View 1 (tube, rainbow, N blue to C red):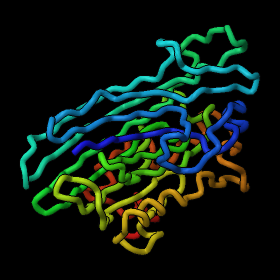
View 2 (view 1 turned 120 degrees about the vertical axis):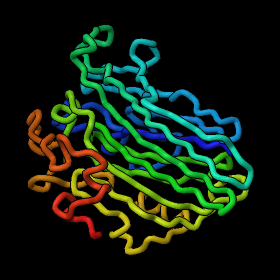
View 3 (view 1 turned 60 degrees about the vertical axis):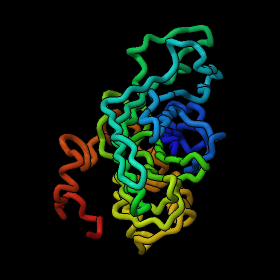
View 4 (view 1 turned 180 degrees about the horizontal axis):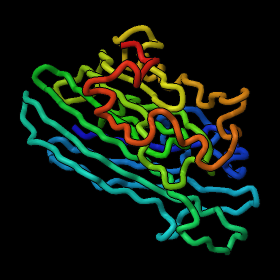
Length: 300
């Protein structure tokens, strides 16, 4: 079976707002439609029989500044980049189990951030938009179950979505993260927030295709308001359409301080980076074992 793993950072509004200097956004909600634009997109192809995990294919939709400066990222030195921090895939065994694991980091810059169309901004002036995903998949063809874990880390801005499709086109949304802060304060030197974590077990066909039901073990969007999506749904059992709808129906723009959109919420560089899930917090601080004071809004 072949699978396509995708992570996309996108801005849901028409504009990045005051804290993003008015750059053009993607004007959409959470989605796994391939036609939807994104600021940075990373894609990985997995072939379980061939035991291959392709190098991350990374691209970016065009950017437009409030001055009308347009960047299509066609020049090689302006394209976003990606790399595996680790990867492994065990041998394929008929009617057996197989493990797939990787940690992928993607990053890109807004090269429309300049004064004229032909101008040039030194790369060190423009902060990177960083996304890192820890992904593991245990395929048990004997039991016809696939356990998937996806942990999302990064700047916390803008919105991020992570999903996986099988070779028949059935897609599972894994993480949906609502942004915190704004571009001016959030992107600079800040790439390791714990943003979201999901663990599910999905029924599969004898060939490894997704067929549902889904048993949800964990699904939390930590920033900015620590949303436990399973608690919101009130169940751990989902069909594939209902599981995807839980993510796709989320409001992509939530209001912050004084009812303002996140992008217009006190655009002071560094102010909104001190979220309680920041600093030295790591995945082990939450799940090995979790402390009720650390995740006070999560119904254990």
